[in-house]
Length: 165
Image (cartoon, rainbow, N blue to C red; front, side, top):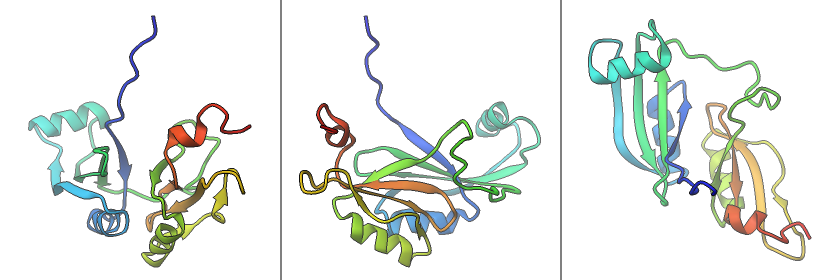
């Protein structure tokens, strides 16, 4: 017996400036705010204890905001006290999260908006099946160095049976 496929709930990102990140993800990517930026302190509150359970003692304080995509997937943004940029923001050999992907049929237009808002285009926009299928993709960075990918079509269409034939 196979387990029932689960749904994806949310992804959490650490950013250096929560207000600027909320602005980028709402104005450029069109996500909507579920919970405005909110401070959380290391204390005996329910959320304080929950953060200590995850982060360990000494995390001090953070700010958090919750956003969502059109298909109800959450984006949880964290501004941690004393956060810093990694030496390599695409350390692909390191275990853990490599990237996430956003779907937009206008890959070119969205990449232009990302770059205009201070992000980066990491590669040329590529076609998966030139002349056969209109699937396009591109890796980008938000203005804070978080790497993500833009897809023109759904994950299922792009990688379904026969996708590489």
